[in-house]
Image 1 (cartoon, rainbow over the protein chains, first blue to last red):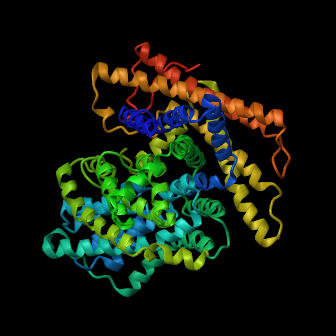
Image 2: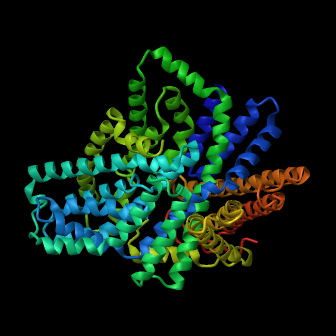
Image 3: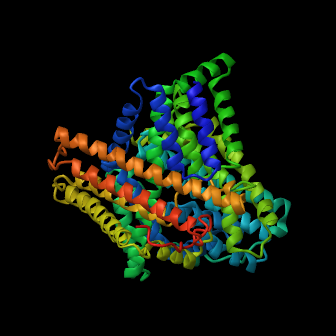
Length: 433
Length: 188
C-alpha cells in the first residue's frame, strides 16, 4: 500500500510538471511493479513488453483510428452549416430557439465527428454569428455552444467511450448503445436549461421568424448525409450486422464518400486527414500503453483491496460511495480535464466500482458525462478557451456566466443517470444480450 | 487550440508537413498508407463477408500489423510536433529559468522513456524469435514486427533528445502549449 501511495504521489508530480501522460503512467507502473513483484525488474520488463505488444497486435483496437479518420473526413465535408440551418428552421421560432437549434446541431454533428473540441469550434463559427443577428446575448450564445460541444463527447460513436472501452476491456458496441439514452436525456436537460434561462431573461434569446412546414422538410433533406451515416454506423452495431471495428471502417468510407459528393475533398486534404488521424491515434495509444502498465501495478499493489476495506469500514452504501467518487471527479475535473482525467482515474476507480457491483458499461457513460463537465467548467474548461480563442471580443467572464446554467444542468443529468441506470443500460441489454 | 475550419486545416497541414530529417519524413506517408489500407481492408472485409460469404483470409491479422505501424510510426511524429497528451495548466504558469528547466526535464524524460520502451519491445522480439512464434492464421513470424516497432520507439526517443539538444544549444524552441511549428536542427 505504501508503494502504491508513493507511486501516486510521483504520478501527480509528473502530471503537474507537464510530462507526457503516457511516460508518467508507464514510469510509475513499471517501477512500482518492479518494487512489489518478487522477481523485480525482469518481471516488470516482461510484463510491460507483453502488455504493449499484445495491445498493438489486437486488431479490435483499430476501432480507434477508423473512427478518428471518420471525424477527420467529416470535418471537411462542411456539414455543420446545413445541420444548423435545418435545426434553425425547426426550432428557431421558439423563445431561445436558436440556442435549442445549436444544441441539436451540435449533437447531430458530434454523431459523425466524434470530437468535442471540433464540434465546439465548428458550431462557434456557424451558430454564434446567427444568434448575434437575432440579438441573442453573447454570454448565452457562447455558453450554449460550449455546452453543445461538450455534449459531443458522449454522442456515439464517441472517442472517449472507445478509449474507456480499450482501457477496461468492456464491449465498445455496448458502450455506444448505452450512450444513446443518456444523450437524449442530456439534450432534454439542456433544452430545459434554455427554457429556464429564457424564461428568466427573455431578452437573452428572442424568437426568430417562423418557417413554413415545406421549408422545414426541405431542410431535413439537406442533412440526409449525416442521418444516413449515423444510421448506417449505429444501426449496423445495434442490429449486430457488424462489430464496432467494422462500423469504424464503414463510417470512414461513408464519410469519405460524403466529402467527395459535396466536392470538399482534394488530394492534399485526403492525405492530411490520414496523417492527422494516424498521429492522433499514436498520441492516444502512447498513453494507453502507460495506463495498461499502471493497471498491472495497481492490480498487484493491493491498493484496490485496501481502498475497498477502508470503504467497507465506513459502513456506507454503494450509492453513497459512488456519490463520493463523483464529488471527487468534479473537484479533480477543475484542474485536469478531457482524456487526461480518464487515463488518470480509470485504473484506480474502475476496480472499486466493479467490486461494488455496478455495471462497468453504465460507469463508462457516467464517467464520460463527468469528463464533459470537466471541459466545461471554470477555471480551466477547455471548451471555454476554444470559444474565447475564436471570439476574442467576448470577455472571458461572459463565457463563464453563459456556461454556468448548463453546468448546473449537468448535475441534473448526472443525477438522472445515477438514479436511473436503465436510461443507459436498457438499450444495450435489449439489443446486445 | 483555436480551430475554425481554416485553422484546423492549417493545423493539419502543419502536422502533415514533412519534418527536415529524411527518416522522419518517411513516417507520415507510411502511417497514411497503413491507415488507408486499414480502412479499405475493413470495408472490403464486411462487403466480402455479406455479399460473397467469403471474408478476406487473415484480414484481421493484417489489420493488427497495420495498427502497429500506424501507432509506432506516429509516435515519433507526435514527439516531433510536441503533441503528446499532458496536463499543461500548471507548467504553463512557469517562466524564464523555471520554464527552461521544466522543458529540459520533460524532453529528457520523454527521450529516455521512449528509448527504454523500445528496448523492452526488442526484448519481446528476441523472445518471440526464440520461441518461433507465428501469427495464428497467416503463419507470419511475429518477431520482425516487434523489432521494427522497437526501432520506431527508439527513433521517438532520439527525436525527443534532438529537441533537447536544440533547446540546450539555445535554439528558440516553439512553445509546446501553443502547438506551433518547431524550428530545430535535424534530430539525427
